Amino acid sequence: MPMKPQRTKLPARGATSLRLLLFLPALLALGSSSCQNDSSGSLPPPTTTSGSQTPVARATEANAARPAFDGSRAFEHVRRMVEMGPRHAGSAELARTREYIVNELRSAGLKVSTDEWDAQTPTGARRMANVLAELPGKSPDAIIVASHYDTKAIKGIRFLGANDGGSSTGTLIEIARALAATKQQPALTYWFVFFDGEEAVCNGWDECRTPDDQPDNTYGSRRFVARLTEQGQKDRARAMILLDMVGYKNLKLARDEMGTGWLKDIIWQTGKELGYQSVFVEGEEPVGGDDHEPFLRAGIHAVDLIQLTGYPYWHEATDTLDKISAKSLQAVGETVIASLPRVEKNVAR
Ligand SMILES: [Zn+2]
Image (cartoon, rainbow, N blue to C red; front, top):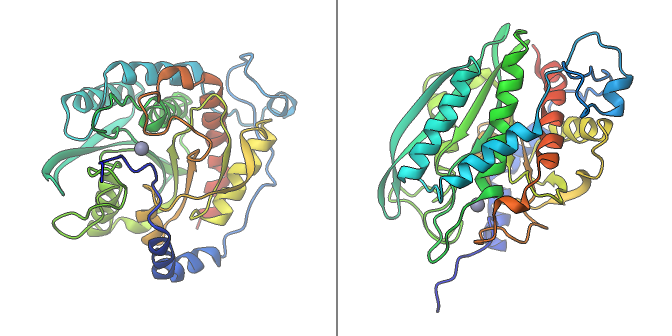
C-alpha cells in the first residue's frame, strides 16, 4: 500500500465509539454541571474607537471597556510564523517560533515560562516545549486559552500550516497582548498556553502509539494536564478555550462535538451578538480529539474552536497565508475576549 498521509484527526469509527463509551461518564458529568449559561450581561465596547467596532459594541454603554483585539496584528504574527518555514516538533524552526512567541508575550508585559521535556514518540525521544504566559487575576482560579504552535511534518510536502498551527497561535498572542494592555486585573487568572506536539509523528492521527502506550498526538496538552495534576493545581483550571484552525478567509465555526455545552453556548451567542453570525454557525464539527480532550478527561470544562470540515487545504502544501484573513482572526479574537467575563461568571465560586 502506498504511504499516504491520513487526513483526519478522527479515529476509525469503531475507535470513536469506544472513546465515547470510555469517556461518557466524564462527559455526562460535565453536561450535568450546575453551571448556568449566562448570556444576560451586555457587551462593553472595546477600549479603542477603531473602525472595527461592531454595532453591538457601539450601541452599548461604556461602563467597562473591553480590550481591543487587532486582527491585523494577529495576521502579522501568522505571517512571521509562516516565514519561518515548516515548524514541526523538535525542529530549529519551531525553536525560533517559540522564541518569537516568548518575546511577543514578554513585550506585552506578561510573565512567561517554558516547560521543556523529552517526549517519547514512536520514532524516538523528541525535545518539546510548552509556553505559558500568565495574567494574574484577583482569584488564583484560572481560565486557559490555548493553541498548538507546531506544524505537522508531512513527507514530501513543505507544509507551512498558515491555518493549522499558525492562525490560532497568532490570534492567541494578540488576545494575550490585548488583555494585558488594559492593565485591569481580571477576576480570574488567565493562562495563555502554547502547546508543542499536537500533531501526530506518524502520518495518521491514531496510526501509532508511543513506546509507553500513549497516543501519538496532543503531547503538549497531555503533558500540561499531567503536570497540573501532579502539582495539585488541577482544581485551579476552571475552563479551557482551545483555538485550532481559526483563520480561513471563509471561516465557519460549528460547535465541536466533544466540548462542554455551556461554554459553546456562551461563545456562539457572544459571537452572534458581535455580528459574527456568519462565522459562528449552527451545526456540529466532528472532532474526535484535539488538545482540549486531555482537559475534558480531567474533568475540566473545555471547548475547541476549529474548522476542520470545509477547509480544503488541511494538511496540504496549500495551507498558506493567502487562505487566511485578518477579518477571520478578528472575529475569533474579539469573540473570545468578549466571552471571557461571561465564562468567569459561570465558574466563579
Ligand atoms: Zn494539523
